[in-house]
Amino acid sequence: MGMRRGRQSLGGFFHDFRDFALKGNVMELAIAVIIGGAFGKIVTSFVQDVAMPLINPLVPGGRLASHGDCSRH
Image 1 (spheres, one colour):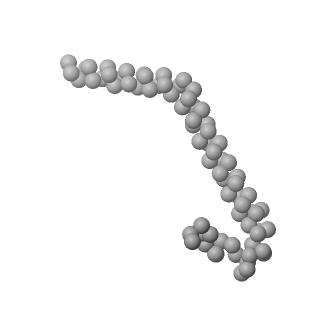
Image 2: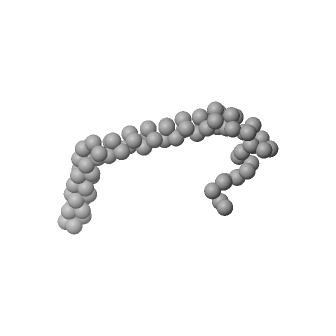
Image 3: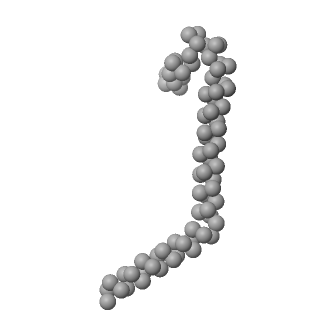
């Protein structure tokens, strides 16, 4: 009898979680994470392919990446 009660509460948990997930807040969060990841890839690509080739000739030695992190003083 105790096992049956546990299954009902587990089923209730999943039902409640599904209702919560489908309300919209979780879906909006998931979409925001996906868009944020894509935007991060776009920014990384822009910096590596456009900005760094323009900045590197201005740096003594020609490679800004080889100078390391400037914030570690």
